[in-house]
Length: 171
Image 1 (cartoon, rainbow, N blue to C red):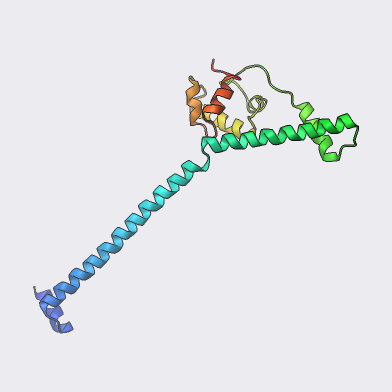
Image 2: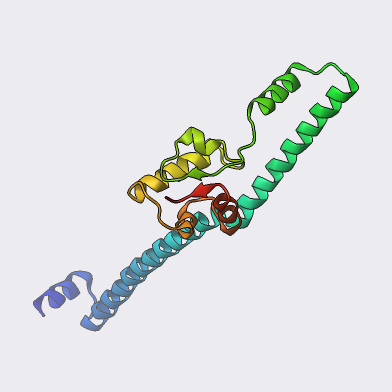
């Protein structure tokens, strides 16, 4: 109690006024701490929402569909130019050479033994997806036992999984 008495004399306040001011300052500090904690929690939940929404299955599938439509129209334009005997620009020549070099993959592939290059031969699997699949396989100890495990790979949804089942074996 001597502390309150000394403070009351120096500030020329009563004990009740000092108690009230102390309580108000305590609530002010407590409110600031609680507000900061809530804003940190909100920021963490917002970051998690953004990360999960970044590449939803539907978005990835729609992007793949758009890319395949664009590729088909380019092939049609190249073929139409070849039929009419038009001179192809240099970029179209390279595109037609590249498309003729890359043959469609028709067989099956052992996923647990496939290299990045072999995975890229599968339609719809580019360098990024092949790298993700290899990283996934490595994380699983070099062996995947069930096709449902592929759903853990970023960019592989139900549709993509059904597509990959046609080309992969898990031996």
